[in-house]
Length: 221
Image 1 (cartoon, rainbow, N blue to C red):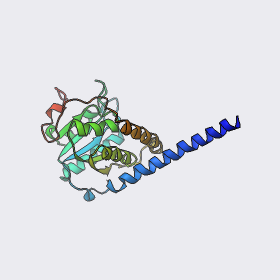
Image 2: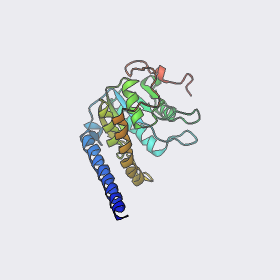
Image 3: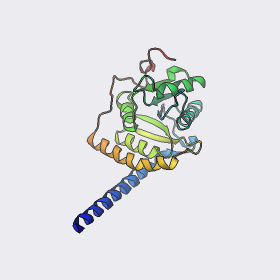
Image 4: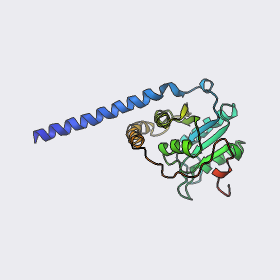
């Protein structure tokens, strides 16, 4: 019994140590690529906005609104030329990407400058599809500070040349929870990268340098 308890304790300690090492590795590999000041960014053709929840009335949650606002800031200042909005549109009644598009339309951004990735169900899928479907090679990733290290880490491992722009415009309820969740999300990302997981959906190529129309719904609203 004592040997079993010792083995259990050492196993748990080993797992905790691996999680800490992975967290350190993810943060270290991305820290020089994450910026808070837009003036520190190298102008890049595309800004990749990672999705987050939308409300039942189809308005953006505070986290998502801040991501889109920061992306618009880059667009308005000429730092990016095109948006790649990547999020969950797996069900007709739940649609992160068109909610973001409408928000940008209201700010005067034409649809021709907005590409929609309807199958960006998680960070891994968003990065994979940015590379394979939209043929992105370089991008500025716009999301919150707690999320950026993993997003940059995953994208770099896929061969993307990325910069990260911090989208924190306020304090978010549950921010400590989001930070803790990243520890587990890092493990998931590491496993997915090492088994070379396929995305939930792949799809036909829609080059980011071409027309955005093929990425849009047939009837925009």
